[in-house]
Amino acid sequence: MRRFVSISGPQSGTLTAYALPFAGAKQMRPKSPPLQDLESDIDPWGPVEVHTVITPYDAMILPSSSGKLAGSTTHRAFPVKLHRWMIEDPRVLDHVAKVLLA
Image (tube, rainbow, N blue to C red; front, side):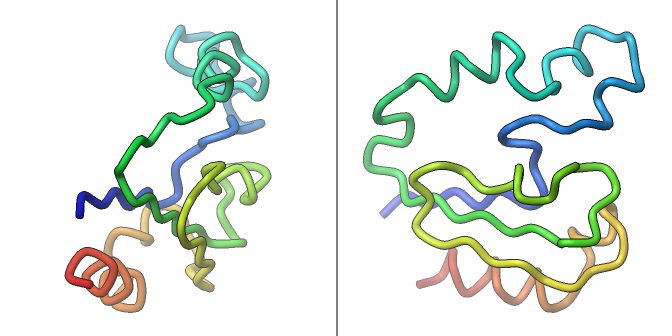
């Protein structure tokens, strides 16, 4: 079984992307053409099992619910204070390890 875990990704865009004029930031704006193209795929994951992890306190991914991928197998929220701490938080790392080793 192939698995993918997204940690605090801006799957449906983020409002903070409006703060920067760069092409990459523009692509992360909600309803941007690249994100709409990704969302239009009826079976984007195929046989890959997808899991998402977010923090409701994320100041980079606004709203934090944007971190959920449509069709994900699981979606978990952890009370981590900062976006960048998500990849260091022991609870998040433990969850990701359990998902990948299941």
